Amino acid sequence: MSDNVKFVQGNEACVEGALYAGLNFFAGYPITPSTEVAEALSSRLPQKGGKFIQMEDEIASICAIIGASLTGHKVMTATSGPGFSLMQEGLGYAIMAEIPCVIVNVQRGGPSTGNPTHVSQGDINQARWGTHGDHAVIALTASNHQDVFAITVDAFNLAETYRTPVVLLFDEVLGHMREKLTIPDPGQIPLVERLWTSVKEGVDYHPYLPREDGRLPMSDFGGVHRYNVTGLFHDMWGFPSADPGVVHGLLRHLVDKIYNNENAIARYKEYYMEDARTIFISYGSSARSALHVVEYLRPRGVPIGLLELQTLWPFPSRIVREKCADAQAVVVVEMNMGQILNEVKTAVDRPDSVYLANRIDGTLITPTDIRNILRVIQGKGV
Amino acid sequence: MERCRMVFSGSGGQGVITAAIILAEAAVLHEGLEAVQSQAYGAEARGGATRSDVVISDATINFPKVIQPNVLVCLTQASYNKFSPIIRPGGMLITDSRYVTIQKKVDARQFELPMHRSVMDKIGKPIVLNICMLGAVLRLTDLVRAESVMNVLKRRIPSGFLQINQQALDLGMELAGEHGV
Image (cartoon, helix red, strand yellow):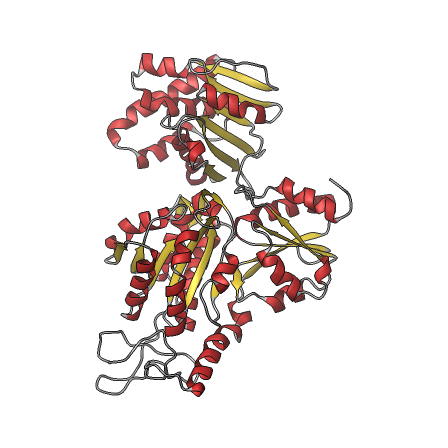
């Protein structure tokens, strides 16, 4: 079998995707269940001339990747819930200063140090609203190693396209389980490279002056152009400004650049959706259990399908609404107290027909769990 | 093929997790099958009874964990006590006859194999007990060829250790053969 086929952990699939996308700087602080991301990159990055730094904590880790990104590198950090909490300040800074970076959160049980070695999907809303102030964010996930690889490449592409941090919300089951991964040949998945300014040395460069297409070309910090970077509201030079017009324009820009592209950023997969009257909506490892149930019930004549979300933020409301238009019941399968459930209820025409099938005890929700909940929803009892 | 769900259990250091990874990797890289491997982390994996799950199939595997194993391997009494109740009816139980005393009959074919004793008598190095166990599993399940396992081992371990691993694998297959395949 070809060397492109590997049998790896999900964390390693993420590493392979990041390297394929051109990652060349990683700073992080190991934490279960994300540690294998740092472990693998500590050997892989130096081999290709990249840099791996183990930082003193997660605050330093995200600050280091933000700085490295400004100097022209594709960057990533990886953590889990407690570390992701510490990174919120840096995440907001990267959103405000419009710095491309990828933050991997391999979710474990929380709050606080929670349940370090067990699965959860409890950080979905933290990715959306963990950092303060109005803002938009891109957060992606996947349910198998081939998709973990591809979505990681996508994360780097979206980070460069929209000049924004992208959060990858994996989970302990995906991170630790091993399965097949086929590494695509170079060029098979298109890559978005850094958009560098065409402004020459000695000519004024405005870091926050959009081109006609809305994109902001970058100049490597410390290179030929002098400019300022700040977490304060700033003008096109990057210098702080409290001018109401500047503040209004920048905040609107930060939100609009993501939300005006909700459909372009939306990644999802459909299974048996054509005539489905009951629709599961799920993501990450719980989508595997949901798909197992669909593939069990379909041959038994049950019109049931799965909409697997890969983009969680911006939440693909229009797509969810359209796909669920004819459903009698929509069942959100997730491992939290209903974080995506609420988004689905807001998106669909009939929120009363949206139900939660969840499990929150650190165990991967099983097909039996889902089928039992489905029976109750259908009025068949347990 | 029937989807095969396996649980390898024992105590930390016996190599049951490594054996599970090797088997699953052999199935994927050298047999063209699908396989998923996972393991228990945390306090329950330290001492006591550790566990690794492997699912092997010729079709896509969605749910990656094992609830009821077709094949359950227990290399310690603690792991036998903990996991024997979950075996799938009609499944297969493989235990080491030195470490495990079967306490009650389960609805499964039971193989009490003297793996530890044979490894110590014939090879003298307990480190390959897990590969001997894997040999028994290969013989009893007929899912993956010994050659495929050796191909995985060639990539994973120093060449100086290949021979005792080959011996251990053969030994496991012989033991399983002698006990009524």
